[in-house]
Amino acid sequence: MEQTKNSTALATIIRERRAVKKGYNDKPVTEETVMNLLDDATWAPTHGNRQPWRFIFVGPEQKEAFAEKVAATYPEEKQENRREYLNEPNAFLIVVMDVPDNQKQWDENFGATASMIQNFWLLAWEQQLGVVWKTNPHIYDPKVKEILDVGEDEKIVGFIHLGYFDEKPIKKGRVPVSEKFSTFKG
Image 1 (cartoon, rainbow, N blue to C red):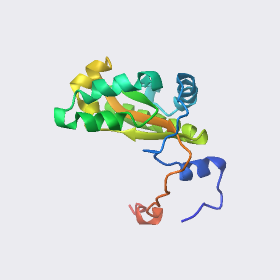
Image 2 (cartoon, rainbow, N blue to C red):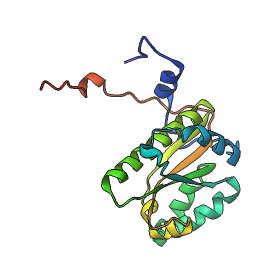
Image 3 (cartoon, rainbow, N blue to C red):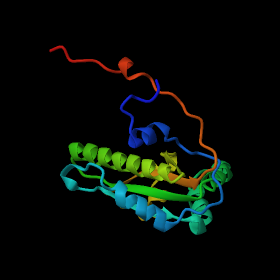
C-alpha cells in the first residue's frame, strides 16, 4: 500500500524511517546533536508526567573502550564477535527506565519510554542520522548494569546504535491494516 491520500510530511517520515544497522559513514555523532534530538523526543506521552527515562551517551571517543568493557562480559569465545559488533556504530545512546513495583506503572513507563525512543528515531531520521534499537543479551547482564551505573530500580531498555549513513536501507513492507483490524460487534 502506498502513501495515503492525506499524506503529510510526518506521515512520510514515519513510512520512510528504517533501522540502520550497518553502513555508517565517518561523520561523528555528537553529544550536542543527541541532546537536541532528546529535547524534542522527550515530549512523548508519559502517564502522570513521570518521564521515567534517563540516558547515557557513549560518543566516538569512548566507543572503543566501552565496546571492550561490554564484550568482556560475554564468554571468551564470543568476545571478539561482540567487540566488532559494538564498534560498528559511531555512538550509542543507552536508554534507562525507572522500574516501579506496580505492574501497571511498569507497563506505562515502558510504553512511554518506547514512545520517546520512536520520537527520537523519527527526529534522527530527518537528519539522516541512522538509528537502531538493540536489545541484545548484554542489556540484561548485571555486569553491564554495573559498568553503566544502572540501579536496581532501573532497567536498560536498549542500546540505541547511532551513525550517519549515505545509503538508505531497503524498505520492507507492512501487512495491510485491514488484515489486523476488526470492529467490536457487542
